[in-house]
Amino acid sequence: MKQISYENFFANFSNKTRLGILTALMDGPLSVSEIVDKVGGEQSNVSHHLESLRKCSILNVKKEGKKRIYSLNKKTVYPMLELVEKHVGGCGGSCEECGLCSPVGERK
Image 1 (tube, rainbow, N blue to C red):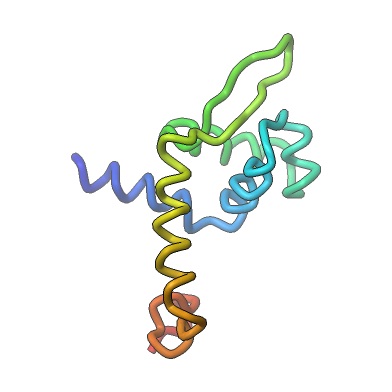
Image 2: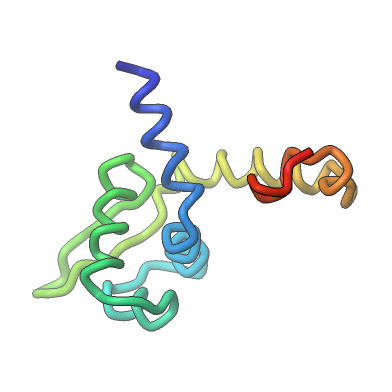
């Protein structure tokens, strides 16, 4: 079902840990331990989030010896980030007024 695929894809962008992972990887590829250092939390939890992001083609992974090195899938992530930046950057700081970018509990 396409709707489930969309839900899974966009759910990856609504999780604080996954957003932290994406932000950390914007500077370049990192190993799991490097991501854990930047994001914090338990290694097993971060690995779970990395696998979810990989399954949705948001991340690429390659093996270097025993390490797994993760990087952003530029074909899927950068167009999304550009779209978000266009919206958020284009609202001129009036996000609080429209309520669309406010946290869920604070929407008008």
